[in-house]
Length: 491
Image 1 (cartoon, helix red, strand yellow):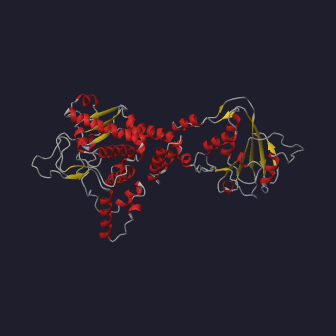
Image 2: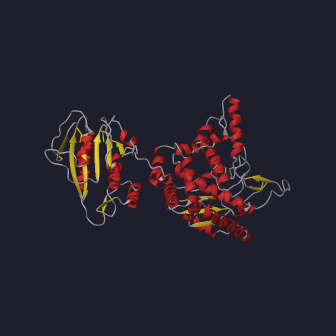
Image 3: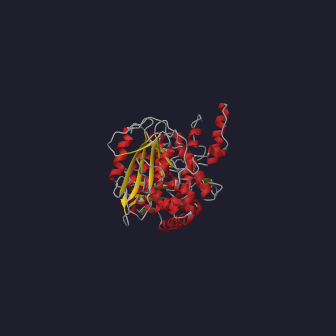
């Protein structure tokens, strides 16, 4: 029997009777077509990324393999697919696609090797598959059937009977509830139990036993190959460790699939939007890595609830992005969003670029000198604005009064703070040293601790507030809200 990573040998192998193989292939293709028209956009894209779909008896059911050379393939046992009905094939393919996404999203090795998480993954995947595919029960195959050999044991027993394929979420929940009852503990209602992947995992960890209550046919679920809870293993069946799932290949494949589906969702695809939001909700509270992953994909934009303030550590990136949004497109300074998203995904800083007819942009930067002002903030802002082509910068310090200055000059202050003086100066109403500010700023950056009477500028959308340590971020709660972010003095 060839190794599962040896795709050439698997392709060359004659796995079963040609008529069985052709029928299995027909069912597989029909199932993938149904995914493509809306039942699971994630599964449709994932299997489109698998360049080979190989019928083979080297595995008992189906699996996506991801080898170290970067290739991916769908392997499926034709005898097993013929034992299932058409909807059953769809269920198994959805299950395997979801397993690969779980491995991509939950990359921590300690988590993935925890028996409670293994069982939780089976429960969650099958719960979602039942709901998304419109089923009320798991698919079935002939009782005691051996997919590698196609048929029953030969003793005539169990003829006509069928058994479920996989872990039944309801049965696991009943076992969980009974386990906690015996411990004298309270169990969650089913809807709360199944709320997120990590909710299921956390609740199963409260159990004293993790034995699966029903036979399972997922080769990822147990080490004996067919996941059947200790039944005799068929000759030629692959064990869990035999399924290649190279971490880098899985990560690349998962990223590509999620980005393609996100693009479809942002273009208005209702099925893609529904499935992505469901997947994101199921991974809620999954940690900073998952938050960054979904943020990079544009989940906030998909939800239509992009916040005015993003409380992240990279305030420099945030300011670059927001500053660019204040400067109109088709003029000289723009923020190329698609290119910027690619740069962020590669770990590079986003970049400003020029486009269109030249019109010098005016940026007014005002520093509150009434309190502590981080040198790192001043230095970075000076560098940012100074190196941005096509921008005319004007610098102010302020407390109770406004004082224009040139970067490098010493600024002093320490009196009470008055934001209204800055507003009046920026809008051309206040004279300083006998001069008014004649230019119309495209953006006004206020670096302050925020403690002063609130103001409402004539065009709040042009104002960007950077709030220093311990400051009051009232601009984000103002009506109308203004772009506002906290900066850290140590950066």
